Image (cartoon, rainbow, N blue to C red):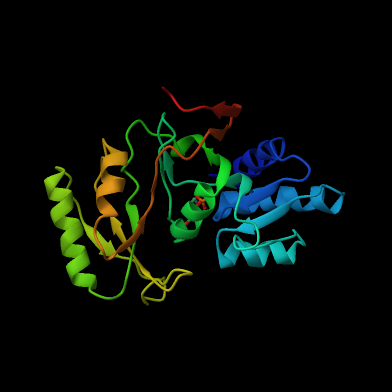
Length: 232
Ligand SMILES: O=C[C@H](O)[C@H](O)[C@H](O)COP(=O)(O)O
């Protein structure tokens, strides 16, 4: 997505931010564009308090003087604004391309409402072209990968399951100190069923499928910005 489209989506999200709101603040380049739009409004007097969904987001908010709290201090939020790697017409999402899925899901579940910001290229008919991030415990990694594999087969899903590494070739570690495996299933026709089943595997900390969490999506395209609501 071009920087311009990210900025457009971020700017459009601002109209949903009301004075006094407790905001969940997402992670990733689109969420960062939103934070950069939010910061000047805060400087100009908009009173909000944010809970960041990652250390990366925390650092940017601190740099731009966006006031923050923790989910411990503020366990109920009004609105979360976050990006996504893919979304379908029901606003099921794949998230976690940046590794923040666990905190993102905790924050989204603690919010009365969630708005996704993305560009048109992320809207798909069926999720799964984007590899599904699954956060796993280090302990028993091979057993967990085998269990994910077996589960996938039982649901007629197949594809490579790779352990995420950094560009420097080190294991990617999440803010929670866990690892991520990326599952390239290609198509995930029943995201809710897969999300529930994955979380029955003890070594799975959380998966990147966000089902029935987003209320709206702000989709930026060259032709303009559109608001999507979940298809019934
Ligand atoms: O872990 C990262 C998040 O789920 C991001 O919101 C997602 O990867 C989208 O990121 P971006 O806006 O950079 O495409």
